[in-house]
Length: 397
Image 1 (spheres, rainbow, N blue to C red):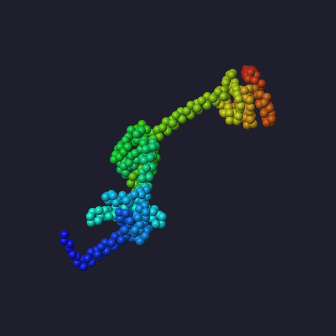
Image 2 (cartoon, rainbow, N blue to C red):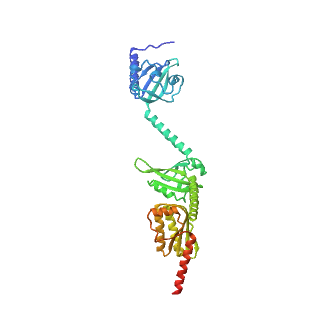
Image 3 (cartoon, one colour):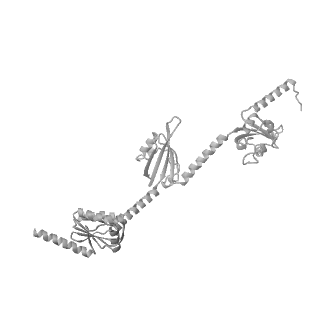
């Protein structure tokens, strides 16, 4: 084998070229780290100093896995010696000042004249912000996926022409629609007669909207939100459609139950204040239990209405079954008798118990202007006598 001799001029040129190459690598904008098979660092440029905070003199001769441990991957640097792949790796490292930096490294194995791997050179750049942004996007995507796969909703988006660009959600199955089935289709063509279309057009024009609708055998509540570009122009509309069928059914069931309860309460009220016409022109209202202010006010309305409707001449309030009255109740009873008198009838109170009588006396209420009798029979006899006298007087005239 012959060896070509190299002139001094050629040697100087090669040395100069090598120095220039080293200078370019040292000042390259990307961080460059080179390490041998034993993981000892033998190359560390200025960009690596700025990115990782360690001066070149401090880094050279250190083990790369000790100076720059890859977060969560203790054998990461050694694997690069074994793997012949230019695929970038992204690892988190701690800078000298303790701050965390995320670096994307593109590896290139360094081989000697015999083709054996002598070490690895990696070219790195700071991707901390990009990694954080990617993480935020993934978190948002996970949140959206969790919502659409768990709740009875449909999340959708349309462009300015009304064409679906996104259409997913658990509630689609209830409506018999597959995930993404509407993508590429126009909402105004799919639902041409839907009253919600006007709300959608206003949303495309820039006005957020809300609507309720019924389609595919399902009741929906819909929210439409315009999305604007940097110039403030609406470029799309994002919507949220909630399946409220179950709520509608529950609401209807509650409404039905409330109507039933109201009817039952009305029956109870009618039974608790039964107005009976015991004689021509004579009404009686037997009252039972504890008579409070609220019940007395209701009785007043019911009895006065009956007096006007029947044209009764006498209204008997039978308190035989009343065990207790309060101050306001006693006053209400007197007012009721006075109002009955204003309607052209006579109010009669019967069956006052001793304890009720004591309450009325202790309150200082004067009953001299009110007809009070011992029981309902005596009151009916009184009414018959009075009506007989009135008829006799009329015949005498």
